[in-house]
Structures are given as C-alpha cells and as structure tokens.
Amino acid sequence: MCRSHGQEKNILQFSGLITSTNNPDLPVAFATIKNTSFRDQTFISNNDGYFSFVAHSGDTILFTSVGFDPLTYVIPEVTGDKFTAHIQMRSLVIELPAVTPYPWASYEDYLADFMAMKLGDDPVAMARRNISPEAMAALAQIVPRNADEIQSYHSLQRHTIQSNRYINQRMNNPLLNPFAWGELINQIRRGDFSRERLKY
Image (cartoon, rainbow, N blue to C red; front, side, top):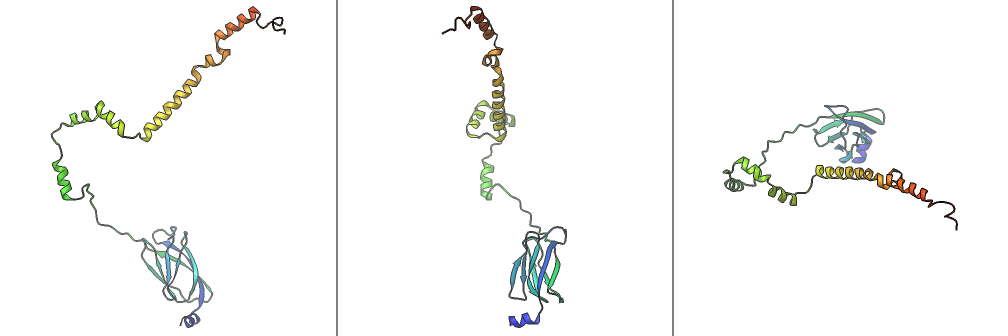
C-alpha cells in the first residue's frame, strides 16, 4: 500500500522555516514535525526553525512545539520536486491559577508557631539585645563572611602591602640614607680605600 501511495503522489523535497505569528523574526526552534499521511515520520526543525525532508504532494504535516498551538499543514500539489513553505505557529498564553505560598506545612504547624511567639518584648529592647557585643560575637563565630567583607579585607591588605613597600626606602636604599653618606665621607677621610693601603 505504501508503494502505491508513493506512486500516486508526487515525491518532493519539503523545506521551510517555522516562525511565530507574534514576531515573524522569531524562529520556533526544535519543533516536532510529523508526517501523519506517511508512516508518521517525525522530524525536528533546527535551531533557526529550518526543516527539510522528503514528502509527497497532499501529505498532512503536523507541527507541534512547547508553548505553541499545534498546526496542521497540507502540502499542495506542485509540478516540481521541491516546495518551500513559511510556517507560522501561534504562541500559547497559559495562565496558571494563583498560588499563595505559606512558610508552614500545615495549619497545626502555623498554630504551634503562633502560640510560641513572644510578643511582650519591647522592639527597641529586642533590637539592642540583638546588636549587643555578646550577640555580635556569637554571630561572628557561626556566620561566614560575605563577599563585601572579603573584598574589603583584601583591599585593605593590598593597601597595607603597597604602603609598606615605600615606608622603608630610606633604610633600603643607601643613597637616600644620610648616615651611610656620613660613613662614606669618614672612610674617605681615613683613607680606608687608598691605593697604598689596598696593595697586596
């Protein structure tokens, strides 16, 4: 039966580009293309929405993609062995029902947390207690440093190293040391480097 089907219909190269109806410049990438008239052959468009495969004139092609309405396209009768189509798929807008998240797994958990609340404390006293030196020291033991603190520490360390590099130039470079100059002059006066004394 498939052989007679192929003989009755014209074989052609069916190519095309799949885009969105809302934006013709937006391709529908990796859409599923099924030839429902011939063995349910399935193809996939590429990243740019382009497809090309062998089909027959009059075949019914089903285009499906996530987020788009399924589209059925019938290849028209053509005289040549190639046919190109521009397929436009309509995007789906699915509205989900509103969901309100709660931090409690059940009403019993909420009731237990509500009954355990301590509302008698003064907010100012509670804030002072939270930022007391003891509380801050306890938090410093368990809370890791964030990126800002690490960056500030490294910046301060680089600044300290850069500052220390030039702090002791007077001692590191004898040309800038007045005591070294004084010692050199005294050595010249004493004749420590005279040619007569340096003879072997």
